[in-house]
Image 1 (cartoon, one colour):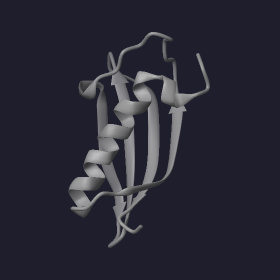
Image 2: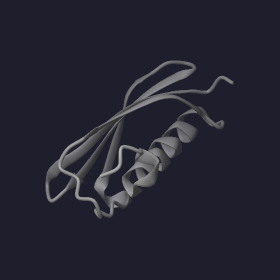
Image 3: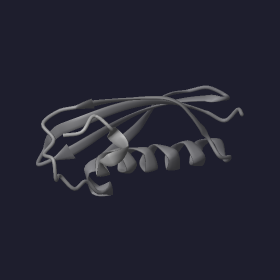
Length: 89
């Protein structure tokens, strides 16, 4: 498996999910400050869709949002991600 997350379907699915949450919370286009993805047992050709992604807001301030995301398949967490978003540019 490549170390380049952007080449894999799970990366874009996670990012899209988090972006939608941050946009909804801030009401404006958010800026991704940092993202961390911890991978479990991912198969090279594993296809992930929105039904596998579960996200929650860990903490929110006026201009910063912390989001935790899990990819769950067959009742197992196969990847987790944390990110920090801002509404300031």
